[in-house]
Length: 506
Image 1 (cartoon, rainbow, N blue to C red):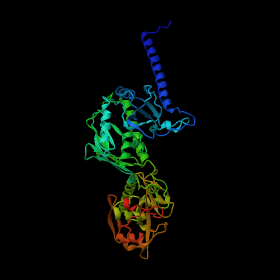
Image 2 (cartoon, rainbow, N blue to C red):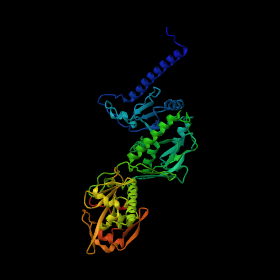
Image 3 (cartoon, rainbow, N blue to C red):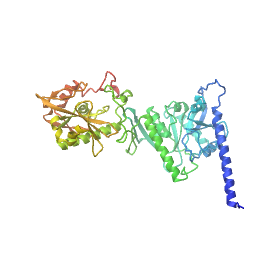
Image 4 (cartoon, helix red, strand yellow):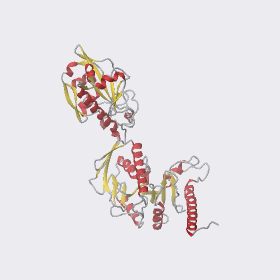
């Protein structure tokens, strides 16, 4: 006969208790979700509140399914004000379920739409009836409801000078006041330390943020995570500021927030993935941090370039009122410097051609909206360069991963950044004929014309993309011969009939 030990009995009881808790927790969460999903009638439609009442709604957006302290945070606010509206917002139905109280002022909104539900069920703005919202991190507690009232008083007293107020959460690091400059045209966000320690365009650190409900939900993506990263990119573009209230602070129920290093690691990875998604969604390729370190979210040698085939000399990003992504410019500069180094060491006479020379003359760099680099060479020098000499038998991937190939469009050469990333340098072989430089392949570009050889005798150095390259002498006349008078002083997109450069916003 099998004997059941005391320990086995305790284990069995604990298992049953856990199953009961999980069952009722799940049932309670479903009731909370279904409470705001039930339509009042088959044909009824929901509308946004035409007017909102005074007060604040707590929004808890950032928490992890695998470990969170949402229930404790909710209880903390309800203890101070039992009728306090609280809204949890999740991408999907949390599992394990959140142990939330079954009261009408506590609701869970799942952003993932359900095909059997009306659209309002996944839109949190339909359930907020107060003038202001407070964005609260996971695990935050409240000592007194007066903390929220004080934040509300501060934002009203600012009379629009500060659209948001921030109160620090008790943590090791205090809040830092940052300035944020977002340049969508250049796909860049730059953070710097603000001159003021109280009013700025962003805060760094764990904070409780209060702002008007109308302003918050007028943002294009108000609930994208990481919440503060997404929020301050959008608000800085609108010129909004945030005021830090050092005299108010909120405690946390657990420090650190996660009970194990493994859970902390999982949470960190989620934040990194969410951050990359924010920058990808907003079209940010380069981030400069307040310590001047750069983070890149664009293309690399291992990924395709950021734009597709270019039609009519007008890349797709120009139609979005953007210039060449900075990662693409960086790759073009690296490729140009590398190719020029090979040509110089091989004894191949070269010069900057076309729009590339125009960029050097105007910017000492690649034109900010250009998408390739053009070099001219003497046809008779090709045998001096082993890579160019051997291209005739097929494309070559060199030791640095660059791809050297004969262009399919005609008798010229192309060096690609990598086998996957097709950002490239085009090399055009010219030869002299009766004192005029000509070639065998001509493209349908107005600047693609013959020119006197005296522009190449001698070649002269010019600053370009952070290094020195060779250029035709009297390059201003050379460029005006190709593009027309005043081309250096009057920038324009390559095909102004399709897309014109906005001169006022240069």
